[in-house]
Amino acid sequence: MSPSAVTAMAALLLTGGAGFIGSHTLLVLLQAGHELVVLDNFANSSPIALDRVLELASPDAAGRLHRVEGDVRSAADLDRAFTAPAKPIAGVVHFAGLKAVRESVEQPLLYWDVNLGGTRALAEAMGRHHCDLVVFSSTATVYGEPQEFPLTEAMPTPPVHPYAQTKLAAEQMLASLVRSEGWRVASLRYFNPVGAHPSGRIGEDPSGIPNNLFPYITQVAAGRLEHLRVFGEDYPTRDGSGERDYIHVMDLAEAHVATLDHLMQQPGPTQITLNLGTGEARSVLEVVHAFEQATDIAIPYEVLPRRAGDVPKLEASPESAAKLLGWRASRSLEQMCRDGWAWQQANPNGYR
Ligand code: NAD
Ligand code: UD1
Image 1 (cartoon, rainbow, N blue to C red):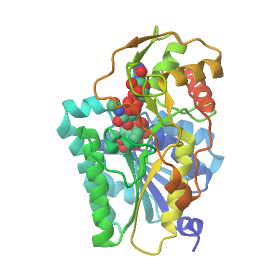
Image 2: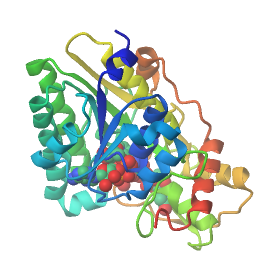
Image 3: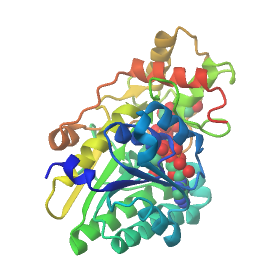
Image 4: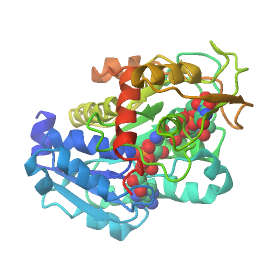
């Protein structure tokens, strides 16, 4: 049976589907014709994101989206999500989680509770509802402070902070269910997701002053922040500033669809771990210049010392995903800048 035939008889569950990556993936899945449930407690998102997704999707999409406000750690909330559609849930994409490195150092138990405890509660609910397929949101920070590039999935994973530790532990917990229960599991290690849907209607909505480079730059461009602080120019990189593998969130969304299609076609136990990046690291200064070129807006910056906890460089080998899924990121850094800027301009206060 083709994946689309399987999912025509079933629905998919997105935990954290109102968040940055979840909302973009939700849109692509609705546009592909799927019936979906979103379980989100809106701890770091807004229900308005779901309204905007429906606005962008086809007119019949509203009838194919079930919204459940609830916590992924709650068995009762999970049961409501699994029984929201009349059809069974054939697969889950598990985005719900916390992602701020510094907060994870300050509040480790919260991170173990939500990221590992939430994944465990989800796995138990999947067992109750006879669902054996899950795509898990993991992260490139599981590689710690790597020395060799590009990073392949077989390289060592010595996570250095609670956020990365909880993500690696959740990967391992799900892998053990492939062995014991014959599940089909994909752990996707995202590099640095940025940009927004080209419509400017959905995007990343950080609360307060952003920690991450891209939202910080767009707020400087908008005049909300005076100048960018470049953390470190003494790294052993091309120009001394930190290098990351930035990937357009729409490329990432499409990778989830390709992963679901691939898992649906597997007849038995399957465990895959894939890096999702472009394969091309860019420095902070390169990003600044690309943004200036794409938007014609100057980004003033000052150079500060390195930020604690930052690694010099992260760069994916995207080859496993290309081989297994036939998927590669296709959107340029310029597009990431243009689309991120369009979102910021149209929504100076995010969804608020
Ligand atoms: P996000 O915060 O925008 O989305 C996470 C969503 O999960 C939010 O809508 C939030 O309200 C929801 N959520 C949080 N705790 C919940 C709970 N207990 N119950 C139900 N819902 C809950 O983050 P994102 O950038 O979209 O990231 C999605 C996933 O990808 C996360 O698991 C994150 O750790 C992972 N990830 C993100 C990045 C990144 O740079 N954005 C990189 C690597 C991995
Ligand atoms: C950070 C997290 C990572 C998380 C990701 C998305 C850390 C150590 N890592 O990744 O786990 O998955 O965010 O939430 O917190 N930079 C500046 N000025 C700024 C902001 C950033 O120079 O104002 C630099 C950083 O030093 C880094 C690069 O820009 O070299 C990217 O930073 P950022 O966007 O915060 O992402 P990461 O640190 O890679």
